[in-house]
Amino acid sequence: MVNCRLDSSTRERVRRMREVERWVDGESSHSEEVAEHVAGCATCMAYEKRLRMLRAGVAAVVRTETIGDTRFPAFMEGIRRSRAQRSWWRLSWRVLSVSTVATLVLLAGSLYTYEYLNVPDPPVVESASTDIEDGAVTSYASDNGVTTVWVVSQDNDVW
Image (cartoon, rainbow, N blue to C red):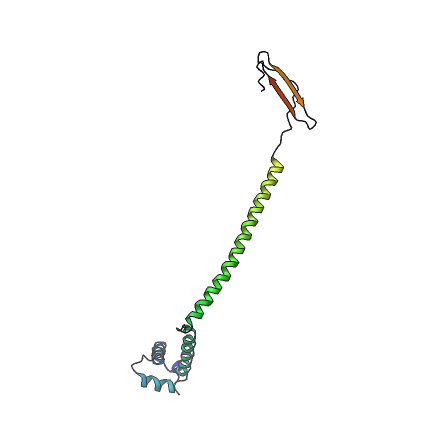
């Protein structure tokens, strides 16, 4: 049995390996010679076996699923059902997230207003007067601290 690894140069081994690759792929112009060589060379026989296993593995992975006319309606129904379920789920998450954000904004606004809004004390009327000729000023303070001031003119107009 011939062994390419021991009997030839690197260039010759590479040339033979390319020839074996072409032969495995069915593209070799010297099929009979390559087949005889592979049958008698342990290195090329192992290389040919690895190539065939590799090609078979790739062919198994590359195979794509096809949908025939009889399976197409069921396939489309599955897509519609999946989209309907997803849209309901997405809508519920959107509503939940928008309501959460709105609640947080309202809460932050009310906390800010409570913390930083200075509400002035109600005004206290100590004295009242008017520059209106013959006008009278009267005031009234209620029990809850609200003071009302009236200015009455000669014509009985109330200001």
